[in-house]
Image (cartoon, rainbow, N blue to C red; front, side):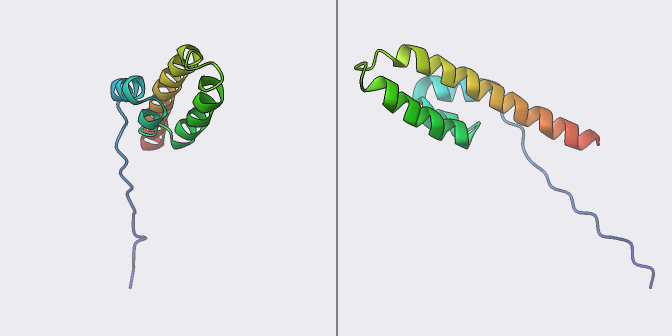
Length: 87
């Protein structure tokens, strides 16, 4: 009864940085949910807190921040996957 330990393989798909950018550009914080759930929730409330008092003009600053955040989050996700597959 020489049993070898069972190997478990977890496969995660990489996230497209381009898709993260497009979704966030078109949908804002809702599109960010593709790349980062926490980021999407944070930017949703940030957009509310900044957008309402400025009658939407504050979104000129918060929307690009969300796009950059989503791109960095998708890239970070992919780097973590690559690092785990090599180790």
